[in-house]
Length: 151
Image (cartoon, rainbow, N blue to C red; front, top):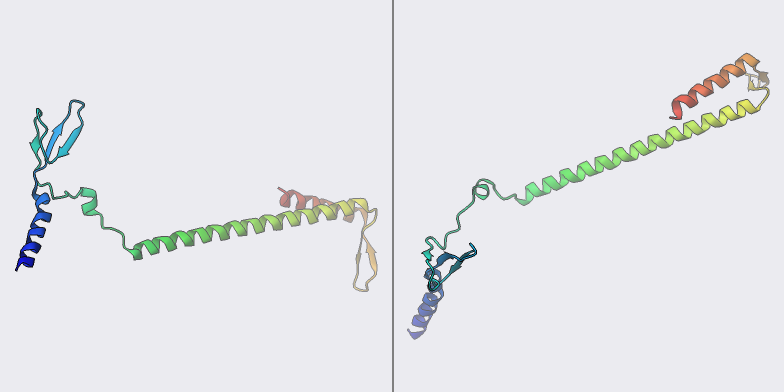
């Protein structure tokens, strides 16, 4: 019986501060203060509904995100990052291919200009020499390739 009384007394003592008076006042600097006792020589107001936390309009209307929403947002961000990385890798590969094609065209043009006579192998494997007009046309074609590939 004494143990039950002691338990009830402890519970009552624990709840007592929750029902204590709370006062609010403003000091001479305009700062608002709260306390269990009103200050002497100052006008203080008793605070009503001291245990209730008013919900703000934002928190009342917005539901907290659950882990599934957060996971789907994360997966979306990860997918966008992967796509951006793939696009960047593709762009770099295209630029490397373009540089290689440009360098090959420049090398071929330099060889053609350096040689006095050019030839191609025919079906029999024999050399068929090009005329000066054919050589000039080939050089002009490589100059066009360089103009388009080497920007």
